[in-house]
Image (cartoon, rainbow, N blue to C red):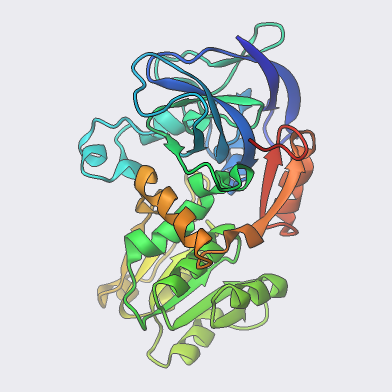
Length: 373
C-alpha cells in the first residue's frame, strides 16, 4: 500500500475530513494515479448531503487529473508516467457501451455510486486499516492518489497544464458535450441555458464554438451573466429581476429558443426551460437533482412537438471527447481556464463553500500547493 491523504465524507451534510490514508496497489484492469488536481463538482455535494444515498464514509472527488504511477495486470493502453484525466466509470461490455454511449451503461449507477468496487471491496483505508468508501465515479480522487480503471483514465498530451485538466472529466465535459454531442444545434440557431455555473458556461462556450447566433444565459448572479457574455453569450437574463421565459421569447422573436438546457437541477427551472422553447424545440436536462425530485410540465406544451431529453456526461466518449476539448482550449476557442480557482486539499471545505455560494465557479483542489507533474 501507498500512504497519503484523502478527504472523507463521514456524516450527512457535514464537512469533509482530511485523513491519513493508504491506497492499494492496482488490481487487474486498474491504474494507480498520483493526483495533481481534482475539480469540485455539484455532484460531490449532492452525495455529501445524501441526495444520492451512497454509503458513508466515502472518499469523494470525481474530476481528477494526475500521473499514472502503477498499472495492474491486463492494462495495455496506459503506462507509468502517462498524464491522465479521470472520467466516469462504465462496463465497456453492454450494448450502450459498445455502441458509443457509455454514459448510459447498464451498470452506470453501481460503477459510479456504489461506494466500492463492483465486487464490494475498497481501494482505500485509513491509517488504522479501516476501509473507506472508494471507487466514487471509479476514482475517489479527493486525495493524494486514486485507483481508477483503464477505461476511465483518459491519456492526454503531456504539454498542457495537468492540474487544470481534471474538470474536463465531468462538469465541463457535461456542459460542452450537451451542446456538441447531444443537442447539436445548427449554425445560426438559438439556445437558452438555465444556470451560469461552470456547466452552463461550458455549454455557452461550446454553443459559440459551433456558431449559435443567439446564446442566452439565465441566472441570478449579474457577475456570472457578465462573464457569460465575455465567453460568447449574446444575452444575459437575471431571473430574479425579470420573467425569464417572456424575455427569451422577446429576444428570439420566434416564440422561444430552438434549444434550451437546464443545468440547475431545480424542478421549477426545468419547467421554465420547457416553456421557453419554440415549437418544436428541444430541452436538454443535465442538472443533478435529488433522487425522487419531480417536475410538473403542462402536457400541452409537449403535445406541440417539444422534446425533453436527459443527457448524462454530455453524451461523450471520454477517450475521444476530452482530447478534443483540450485542442479547442489550445486554439483559444474554449477558455474554460477562466472558470478555475485553485485550493490546497487541506482547504477543501472552503473550496466547497465558495462553490455553493457562487463565489467561485470551478474550484480545483491540489494535494500540495503549486502541485504539478
